Length: 349
Image (cartoon, rainbow, N blue to C red):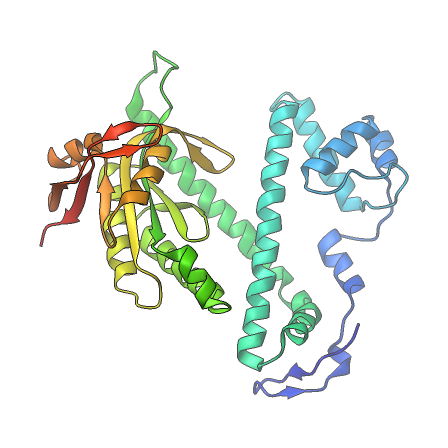
């Protein structure tokens, strides 16, 4: 690999060819050893089929393997054994197995890319390198960070799983037994916040568009999590947020619009807020409530929060706490919902 001038402890670049590494140096810490098995080997050693191995590997996010290609390590074999044993035990079925593998693959792929690009930005900013040199620098130094990244991944997952289980335990304890399967199972407060005039501004901003999106996402995430909510997903110029109860949801959306509206480094924003039933799949939420929130944010005025009549009634009844004001908004035709009479939601001064 071509070497690049590496920064010393003072931050000034200096030549240090001894620190150069190649991609082969990452094989042991990341893969656990050399490539020694084929898909056929894994199938024979576990008394499964080559097709079963290929399905597993595809669900992991990789191309279906040539049965005779040596692409698996001892660690790959151990992971496949453990996962296959989980399915064979009856703890989960094959369809669920593939769904969970795809979840792992999707998140790991995005996380790896996010980490690498963040380190490239760090090298560009701190060492004033060009993009190619910054990427070579990160490649040369990634090995120094792998252990910490792995530790934080496991730690973050453990904390998030504990938080999820605690919330759901509290929720189901208050539910009672469902007698109908017609309704969506989760009652949540959610909505969107988006930047106004994003499409037209994108053409003008050029390279500054990346900084704009990063600033918008970072400020949105901080405001949402600090208020007790969670980010479901980011969609370029929009963020979908969610909260378990009405009180928390109101706190999230009002603090979110206040924080973003005060930031002159992003475009003007608007938001929607709806309380209703949803269902969750693949880390996302779906249902008419989400669709309604999406339609409402499209017609919300700049700097304002728009809510639906049902949610407005709950807020007016004090179910979300005190300190909120509702104002009638002109009736609008919303695709999929017909005529709707929204309300502007604000915090009382």
